[in-house]
Image (cartoon, rainbow, N blue to C red; front, side, top):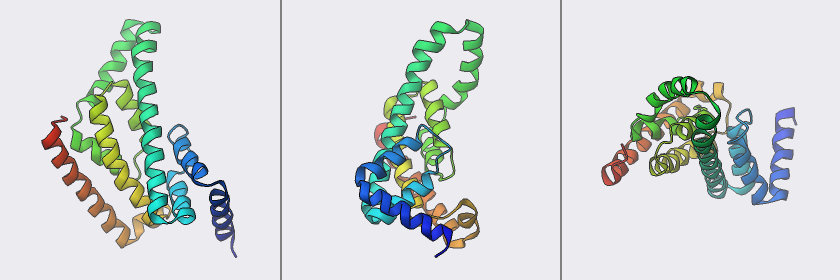
Length: 192
């Protein structure tokens, strides 16, 4: 047994023995500590609980963690930056961030869906721009669903995913589905 198999086996046992809470907590924690590997936690959840339950636990955890991160930075922008920073600095920050606020709903969904997007950064930008909660949450639920399914299905490193033709096709199909779904929801809810 090589070191990777040993690590995966013991990590899966640890998550399994801790139950759903441990798997949930690891993915939730990744929303606040971007250095943690979401792909590894999702793959371990799928290993420990099976594909459907592992993906579901990971999806709920990452959506909840991302939402809390978004709300925190929304609060920070509203209370802290306007209260404790001088107006010139606040204006400079707002000018840079306001470009992100104008992002379309379908573009936001695609950004969140991309498996290699730094979601922590997206959560912060959405919070700082005080993007509408409805727009952020809808994009988050759609985008993260496809992203988590991708990591559950792939469970590989970045390099392996980019050199495996099946993975590339899967990414393109996933992005296409997320785009179509976001267009349909946008038509119904007008989230631009």
